Image (cartoon, rainbow, N blue to C red; front, top):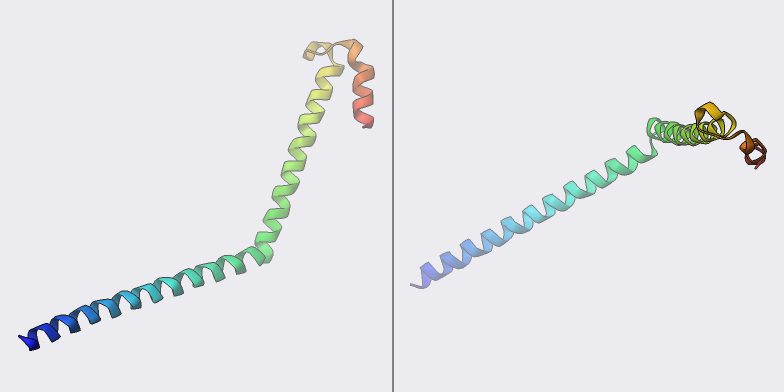
Length: 93
């Protein structure tokens, strides 16, 4: 019986070692992914895309402002001619 108990202990130890090996593999994979993401974030192409995205957001904000201003200045677009002075002040701000 003692031999059987030792075999069971050895099997449990092997299972534990296999689990530890998988944990280290997972840790290494996560480290590799984190490293890859860090290098990608610093890459010139990604930085360029980030700048282009910021410029697109700025352009959309300017278009929204211009559209709102044109509506105030043109009565046929839903604005009122009396709003022209307000619109001119908005443009200067």
